[in-house]
Image (cartoon, rainbow, N blue to C red; front, side):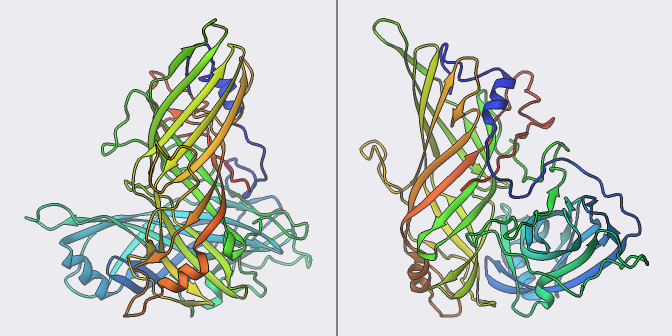
Amino acid sequence: MRGPRAAVRRPSRVRARGAAIAAFVVLAAMVPAVAVAAGPRQAAVELPYVCTLPSGQRPVTVRVSAAFPDRVAAGEPIRPADVTTAVEFPAEAVADLAASGAAGVQAETRLTVAVAQNDARAQATWRGTAQPVVLPPSGPLTLTATGDVPTVTGQSAGELTLSAAHLAVDITPSAADGATGAPTAFTAECSLAANAPDSGLLAGVMVGADPSGSGSPSASASPSASASASPGGQGGDPADRQGERAPKVTGDTPGGTGDRPDAPPCKYDAGYPARPQSLNAYITGYSNVKKLKGAALIPLTCTLIEQGPPEFIPYPDWSGGTIKQHSTGDLYNGGRKASQPITATFLTFGFTPTTATMVLEQTGPVTIDSLGATNFVFTSTDTWVRVPLVLKVTSLTVNGTPLAVGPNCRTGKPLASPEPDPANHPGDHLVLYGRGEQVTGEPATGYLLTSGGPLTGEVSIPAFTGCGAGGENIDRLLTASVSGSGNYLKQIQGQTCFVSAETPNPDECTTDLQPLKIPVPER
């Protein structure tokens, strides 16, 4: 928020310090690294997946290959090399694409890789881009994606394993010649099939000196002892439970910088051009699901914000005044107003392990209303963020068995929070609240629009509708398992990048005008 003498838009170093958030680090150190271990060995794994497409769920074959070192020292980074993710869609899926008017497709992949060492856990995202391809007249379609991936560093001796987990494939169809308008882009959300071998194990790398003094064992697609990684939504921390230090995951961000961890793109483009007061920032956090006694990690998601003009209203004696500001924004995920996919595992009804992949879809504008009071030395600011969101379930696995949810499984109404001003803000929507305080010239504490910080709220999850396939309706199952009130939500917004500045601040923005600061989720 900005206003006369309130110093809310602080000098760059002050804002950067004000954006720092004390929190536990889920994926540890955030610095670039290069693997230096010698003797890489190739691992190639073929895995069965089930993907949710606009026409329904389809079986898909995923082939992942990468080169890994034989053995590394504790604290020595491992960078998988020559990483390829090939996704083979069946003939039925190709026919569905052709029927929609597509002549070809281009795709990007996001493979969640669970990293495990002893009792410690972490997650990495392997991103890849596939070259555009023409749809074949018949038969399957294979999309082969390549790209750099984050490094992984084991913090102690013992085997470090990497296992494939959730896969998202962003598909952009191209129209056939003469067609009016291109078919709609979509994301295929994919989960490992129940018959996947070794729980999706890709490779194991030994960390630490070889106690026998003999040659090092090679990276293997089937190590003798492996631990399956827990998804990021079981209500437990991804760091260790018995004193183990979690493996570090570090890497380059698409588009621009080696000074921050892996993050999805967050950049204005031709379809969403920047304006004079445009900001962008990342958000992340945790959302409790009260009925399931657990929490789901909300992955890093981009937000695009347009600041409104601040209004300063002085006190009668000019000893200070109030500052109001109304801003708007949108979630941004590859052109869609939606979050990154959220994958979480809970014990349904207290005993059945259930893994769901979900997306929060925006159904109306994000509004950000700030009200500050200042005496020109001390400023306090209250901020309310409001956004209508529906929760869409894209895949579901119950006790290891995929359960078809269909393409339209979602809450029947938007998520709803208690609204402090219902007369001016009617309807169902999520409400998040944050308070920031600042002494002029000092770092801010709490939440401010430009520097970010924590926002909290409580949300009710409505009943589900449109869930099921093949004549089976599972609306009541999901409603009974998940829907209800009293679900606590804590969101962390990172430092914004003021993209329209004549000279963008290098402490806030990458060279290609993406947010430099990556927030860490807090409970």
